[in-house]
Image (cartoon, rainbow, N blue to C red; front, side, top):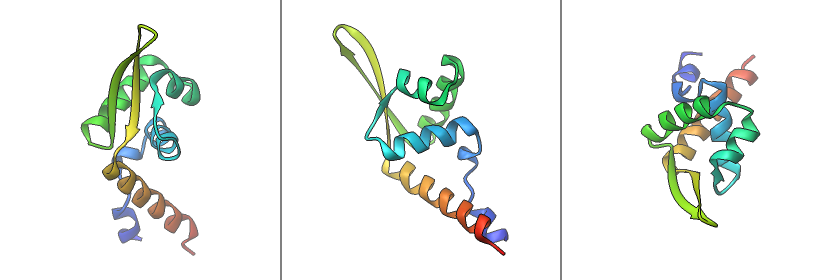
Amino acid sequence: MKTILANFNKAFESRVRLGIMSVLAVNSSMDFTGLKETLEVTDGNLASHLRALEDAGYIIMEKSFINRKPNTRYTITEAGLDSFNSHLQALEELINKK
């Protein structure tokens, strides 16, 4: 049991961070508004969780303009995907432990 828990990643314990990583793991990227609407969170709440994941190196942010309007997109990094998959595997092992 201790080895399973050792593979849990504290960065993904929050519902919002788990949601962000889940969305980005199955989409090539998503903009701030799309994440906000999908996860049904406030701007400030989402921004703080995105910043934490970015600081950890799990996601990257890219700013651009679309029709002269600013657009911020997020993409999961290879390290982020590896860490997230390890976390999911640990969750599955815990659930399936008898």
